[in-house]
Image 1 (cartoon, rainbow, N blue to C red):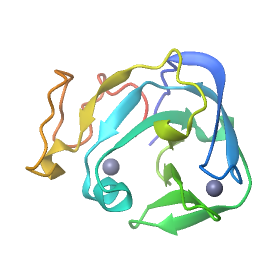
Image 2: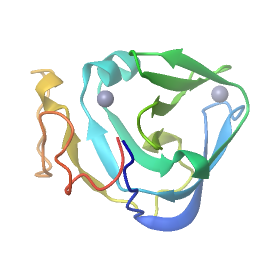
Image 3: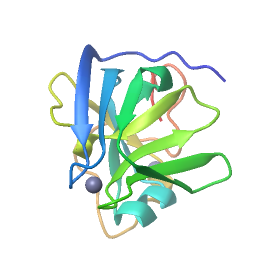
Length: 145
Ligand SMILES: [Zn+2]
Ligand SMILES: [Zn+2]
């Protein structure tokens, strides 16, 4: 499966983990999605905000601990401080970069919520953005995740 990355902003974004051991640069990022799936809840305690970048356009420096979190996907964490920074599924040509690790998010906006079927009943989504049970349908999806 090859998906076309709709680049929200063609500039190069940089980011790093909490301790600074891992840094990256991403050339061209898609807009941001909030993901409420079980994996994200377990990894972070709630949901994530992530943008997509073509795998070839992502340069990582430092020691990333890649953990298998499902059959075909893995999450990338700083080996020193544990910051959750990347999500990579082999069948996609994009890697998700967690928005919280970006140095600057200028030019990026949030497109909506995905995997809301997994959302816990203890919080509400009240921002009025589109919500999808799983992955958003092709076309609205554009790019990432
Ligand atoms: Zn770190
Ligand atoms: Zn998720």
